[in-house]
Image 1: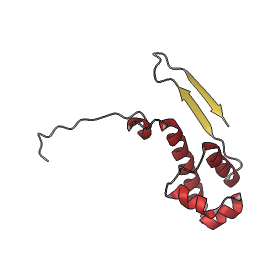
Image 2: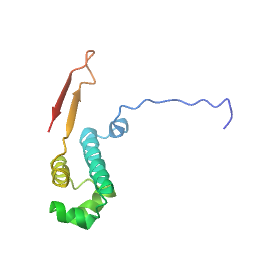
Image 3: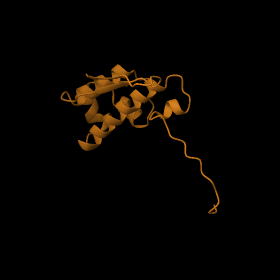
Length: 111
């Protein structure tokens, strides 16, 4: 690379799946965010897959798949249930923004 090389900076949407054109980008993003929080909880609390399975009633292989990540077998509600069984005190917040409006429509929901 030389000093004269030009770089094009592409600003992402905040959803890598949308940026790469996946038709189900929002679902994939939601699953990835939930899986990341599950992984964070396991790491912070030092839980193995076996311990997490005992705590939640889900199979230990589910936690292996979440860590890989192999999320195609998971629904959003299943991941939310796993997260809630790990930490019943957790609040999951969602924010809704329209990408097409000139004035943003924002709404926040806590589950």
